Length: 142
Image (cartoon, rainbow, N blue to C red; front, top):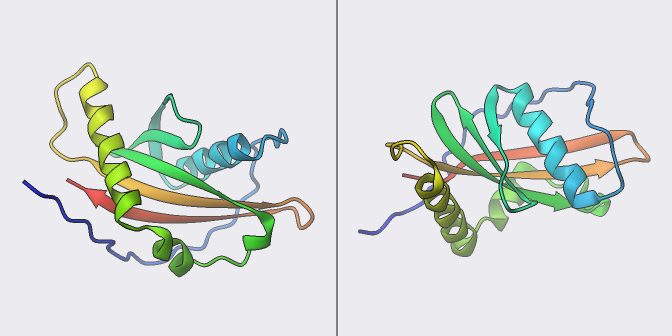
């Protein structure tokens, strides 16, 4: 059985809020925590620890979602959602599918009927006091 991946565009949402995640200086970890806060802000819940610093495990409603966090250097602050989508190649999709399946197999409950892999980019611009987050939903889904 082969799986195909299609990025399905959804309406772009531009939201602003005051982030409460402290910046520690560990850029990758800070980006992951800021991604967690951003996802929580738009309704994602039940975050679980993962063995990977750049991977979040959570749910959108009852759907298990595994999220790869891409820390973007400040020089990429003008990166767009289209730019992020262009980075999601077959290797990223295959990696995401493997993470989703591994997470499902490691869970203690019954296997979920559906799984989804998302990609989030986070860019912190401390000089401007801003964070830019882009979220691609469904880079892979079963």
